[in-house]
Length: 173
Image (cartoon, rainbow, N blue to C red; front, side, top):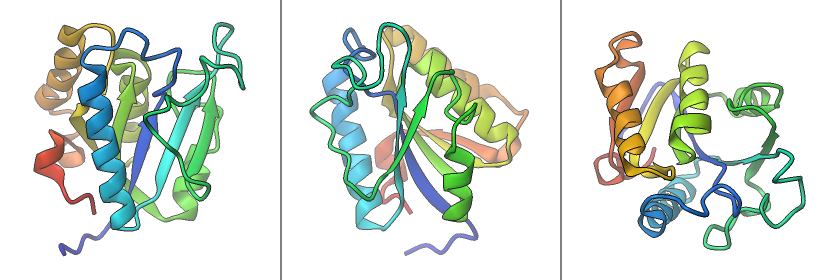
């Protein structure tokens, strides 16, 4: 096991019935998210589920629910949000602080919206981020590639972000 000077958590952002209806390569991405969850749990990393709510996806509705292929456990973190960033007007920062987390593995949907906003916000807040390139999606595959590329090409945050596929990151530690 590699020892790091930081603790990690896995974020699963907005993989909800109403968000991934038309997602690009949904089954493959969900499979990768499940593999990431398994690795995180095996290595005792917190798994934090983020759920977006808006008029078309009110809390408690079918569209708001996490897709049935992914199964949160009772001890996992839960964050409900109404903005793009999982940090804005939520208790995510407090949850991470409670667990002394300084590194986030990011997965979920929609790549150009909530995944992007959360990743940018995490970097601005000083977190190290690993964007799992094959574990986030949106309705258009070109957009997924563009978001991955945006962070790969960005030198603004130096070593604070890495964009790798899941096999390059396993085991999540």
